[in-house]
Image (cartoon, rainbow, N blue to C red):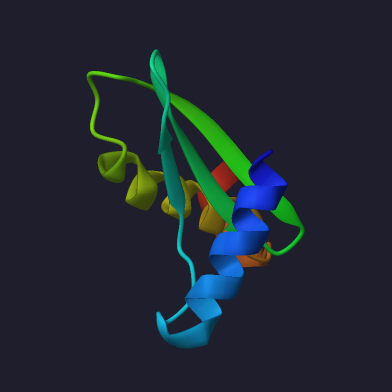
Amino acid sequence: MNPAVLLLTRRRGAIDCGGLEHVVISYGNFHQLVIPLDDGHLSVAIERTAYPQSFVAPIRRLLNKETAPVTDASRQRRFG
């Protein structure tokens, strides 16, 4: 279902909304945070008592770290 939701919201976002950053779906038992990626999407279940927006920036930072090119300097920082 998430790919269909992303397809529709991406299309709407591209019209005049400035694109799509993420979607939060609030189910009865939890929130589902869906973040579109170049090659798919990331889906994270979050407790109903939590605020889903607060997870977006930390997840984006982790994703950026994982996709950053590895250089000699970054390898030294990672592995000392």
